[in-house]
Image (tube, rainbow, N blue to C red; front, side, top):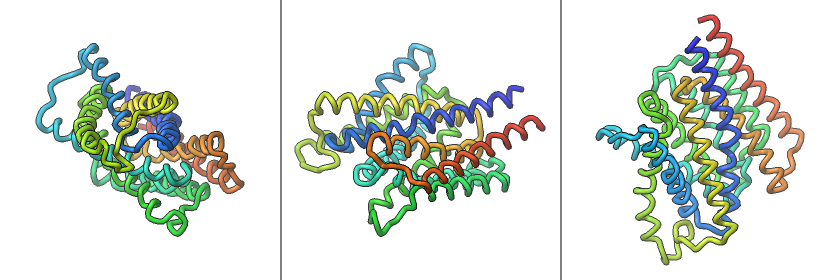
Length: 299
């Protein structure tokens, strides 16, 4: 019964991440009209560390990391910095749903490589469901490199870095509380990025040179940070409770939320192909959930 509850909760946490995650990108896209991308990312991790590190200390979850943990935190921070920086850069110049559709090679990469990297069992039905979900994503926005040029490669870089971010999170979350894991990784990200932003001050480097944000931009930066704290706690809890190869395909639900935000905030009106894609994605996700529930009941 414990195993059933754990996997089911992992699935629910991943679905919650799929709902909250695109809020990070929405706030970041809105903020990028005024604030440099490097400052947006730094603000996110400063807020994440400022909130979660005291919580970890108060709840007696904090500990002195071993040298190996220290290395893993910095590797995890480097991967999320690369992934976040690439994606925020992409959505500054292209629609959110387009970037998300290109990014969605990532769940397939996690499902395909998870069996080799994590030693998790990957059945052919799950692979097929994952491929169907990706096919649905292509119905929503057919990525065109001829239309977006080199910018279209940035979500692919995000997909690559986030794949290995998930693998590392899955391994570390088995022995570390999600709050502690997120707090230490945020601290590592600040240690990496803060000196770069300080160096870039008054250099006129568009992506890095910090500014004094307006009140509106401050609220948007707070939105980025709060959404990131909640979303990444959800995915860390999910990965601590269920195999990555089970929950990764459920990320396709993110594009449903991203498409909705695109319509509400940027007037990207969904066409019939978008609705078809959403329908396919929902079907593939529901199949994975029902299939896993049935497998857990049998076991």
